[in-house]
Amino acid sequence: MAEQTGTAKLTIGDKELDLPMYSPTLGPDVIDITKLYAQGGVFTYDPGYTSTASCDSTITFIDGNKGELLHRGYPIDQLAMKSHYLEVCYLLLYGNLPLAAELEEFERTITRHTMIHEQMHMFFRGFRRDAHPMATMVGVVGAMSAFYHDSTDISDPRQREVASHRLIAKMPTIAAMAYKYSIGQPFIYPKNSLDYASNFLHMCFSVPAEDYEVNPILARAMDRIFTLHADHEQNASTSTVRLASSSGANPFACIAAGIACLWGPAHGGANQACLEMLKEIGSVDRIPEFLARAKDKNDPFRLMGFGHRVYKNTDPRATVLKQSADEVLELLGVEDNPLLQVAKELEQTALNDPYFIDKKLFPNVDFYSGIILEAMGFPTSMFTPIFALSRTVGWISQWKEQLSDPAHKIGRPRQLYMGEAQRDYTDVEER
Ligand code: SDX
Image 1 (spheres, rainbow, N blue to C red):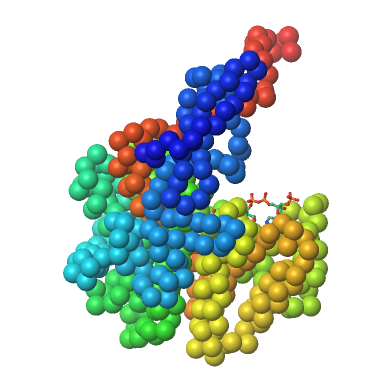
Image 2: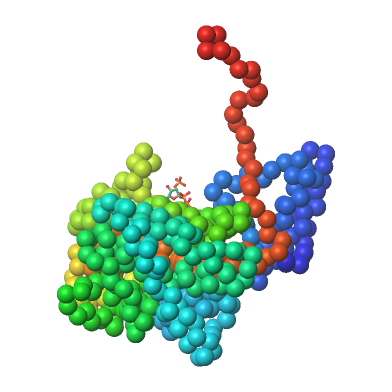
């Protein structure tokens, strides 16, 4: 626990409370209000948690004003350009970059957990073929609780470790199976000879009828997308996983809860919504019409892929993805992709528009990822499953961190009750 570095004085009526303050390694100081209700008889009020730190953590730091993102202190652009996803998984899980032997052992372990229980194949067949792959993933990942009983006891560190490895290893297999099922093609088993990103592309795009060669540049772009989505501090889905875990729920149930939360278009579902928006805009000459809608208070339309609760400057992930988009589309010979042209013109127009400047709305991680994924051959319905696959290591790392804190307790927020005061029941004849 952090050392007290100051005191905040709070006057409530005739009471004056001294609340401890702590100073982080990076970021704003915090005021500890754990005793506020007991001492002051009041709650704080912060719907959406715009000013609330829900925990202390050592995993990821975001500076929204500078547009910085650090994983265990390492800047995301360095990790995206110099590292690879499984090494970043090791960093997030264990706190430091691995030595060569540690990395080799970790990659071997993950590789050997990529198959799912054969009977789970039957579970997919209960879904309609046109089920959204996120619906399938929520169901299948939750159902892992029914297949892997030897890694559900959260009080056993070894079982926590095995569950972490199983989830990181099996999410690509489950996501690829959800995709194959939705297009009526047979499931493709993982191949241990392939790296993590190549294996995912293989399971998604190969068919039994012919050989499939993974394009190494697409595999690199895929791996970079995984890395850029790996963790992001206490976002909505990570907070969901932490809250689910605080009740003692098993890891598979907690990750299923995270997948469900990520699905929303305000969160991980924005990558699918963003590409659908770019397709609806269709051409650069329709951009003014959509910008006007985004600014119209009476229109619920928002510019998907723009804005962020924390980033009030550029999202560093979007910067890397924009570069990757250029590389991938050039490789595929579709650099004149009309969607990319619309995206770039929309970005430039919005960034010079007073509304977006005043509200500090910049492209976020979801703005360019969809363009790359579509160019790689994925349908929009697979964009959020890929986000969920990538974020599993972040959810698991935060889940492990919370469980390793002996002082952790069940999360149970209070409320500002604005309903009816007590009143007596009346029979229907008297109403
Ligand atoms: C992710 O939290 C994370 O870290 C998430 C994430 C991660 O890695 O886990 O980074 C992943 O979820 C990225 C965000 C993806 N979502 C979208 O791209 C959807 C579009 N964006 C918005 O819905 C919105 O910007 C949010 C949800 C991302 C942030 O919402 P906030 O912080 O609650 O901000 P807000 O809704 O209070 O908006 C502030 C103002 C409002 O105007 P006023 O009421 O003050 O007049 O900005 C406006 C909003 O109307 N605004 C937008 C806008 N986003 C905010 N106006 C037009 N288009 C937008 N995209």
